[in-house]
Image 1 (spheres, rainbow, N blue to C red):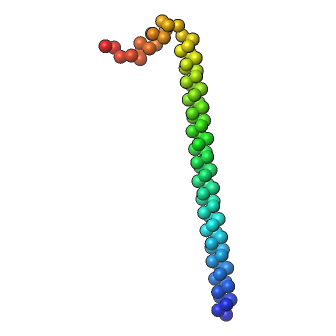
Image 2: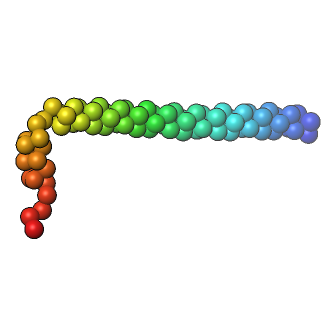
Image 3: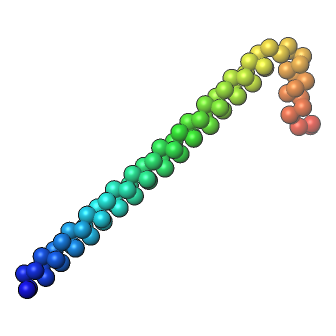
Amino acid sequence: MLVALFARIKGYAAAAIGAAIFLTFAYFRARQDGKNAAMLEQAKRRAEAIKQKRETDDEVDRMGTDRRRDELGRWMRDK
């Protein structure tokens, strides 16, 4: 009878350990997926910023000198 009880407890312990291992792996997998999603979003924002900068640089390059001076004058403080 004691051997049967020990075998039953041993089975429950193995199941509990298996569940704990499964939950641990699931937690770390979800955490890594979250990191990957954040990195992907950051890369998208960085690419959009690079695109915006390139468009702005191209627009400034197309401006004439007088217009550049006028545009820059809007941003400078009066002395």
